[in-house]
Image 1 (cartoon, rainbow, N blue to C red):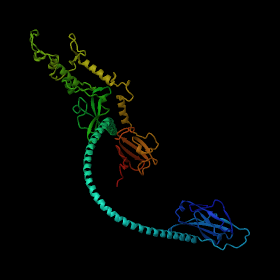
Image 2 (cartoon, rainbow, N blue to C red):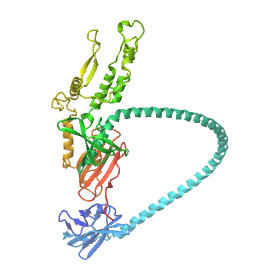
Image 3 (spheres, one colour):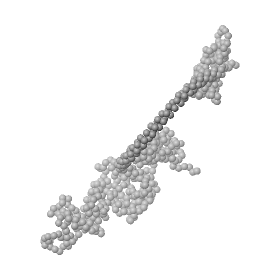
Image 4 (cartoon, helix red, strand yellow):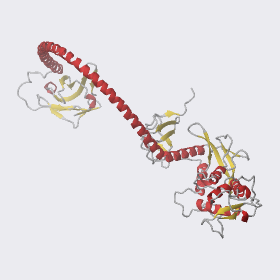
Length: 552
């Protein structure tokens, strides 16, 4: 028989024959509610006859008193949890059928079935006897403890004597400890020196790793700043800078800018469809602002400066890079070259010079060697004030050193030099005759002007952002880039906001393994207010914090 939700469920319409004594019992199966009961009582009722029987475990004997006559036998169960809680089953809807017995010789049993109260009292008496036995054992234990205490007192006296000996030994130990402390101090000093050396080594190693990672970090910072620039593009104003507000050599603005404005500067190397360079005034992480050329400086190689020309002419260290010669630089170079070969008057017949050195001021070289003559003639040339394209000429050295017939140098028109430079620039930067980058021969991942322009157009024209999949993310702790959907199955989502979108921004790609990741997540729930949290370097994700709150 099963007791479920305080209902007695009889698997079959059980029938019981009257006049049986101690022959019928009921096997009970209780649900979890009855586990805490300290005692259970079964109440049997057949007509006017009613009897209570104690439940032993999950079995209860049917008292013969309620089987003395045919009828319907009702059963109810009562469970007690101490003295404060009682559980009672509902009335049976299908009682047991007590059938009339056959012929029976003899009378009813003389011994009554033990009442449930008596059974429980007997159990209490048994428990009392058990407690008395435990008390007796406790008294024996106390006597043993008393004897042990006597032994402990004797041992304590022996310990006191030993303590005196220990104190004497402790004095000796203290002296030895002083010597040990001095040695330990020396060891710590040596350890401190070692730690300092290790720290220097660690710092150097860290510097090496940071230098190794600097390019990646710088690129990530550039991407982050470009993304910030993209986000600021909505509602952006555009301003065309006049002359005097930008550097004519580098085309970089020289004014203090506004981060919400795009500044247009004439392109000194403009081509069809590329007349202006676009600049942004960006705020960087240290609080300062810098000028950033939209699309990168690949579109405008650095110009050769006057300082670069002076360094080359003066015999200093020449810069090594792919750069271009602007008209201003070309004019300066031409002035230097003209000064080298400025006409000099000489009124003496060279055949009359037999000894000595003719100074440069008299048309000579002022030197006895070719290298010294070059220095005297070319080392102090003045720059021309201005040079026009019409008279632009260059003096170039012959690559083979020349000879007495051809000479060591030759003159070339400025247009020839420009054509040569133009060809070098085109071949280096892969421009075709239409002033566009050629794509053949470039690696699949190479950056081209077309790719940069398309990237800018795509990033500025797309105003919609969406999750690539409508499937909910498993764990937002693993979400490091882009937008995902989250719901009640997603781990580490904002509490109380079970549905929404989560966007993550990071300084490095999600696929990159690094200890220097800066990631910020924005939770945009379907209800409630947006939340955010961040993860910096090796740290854990912070708690979700609200981005705004309702007005008080």
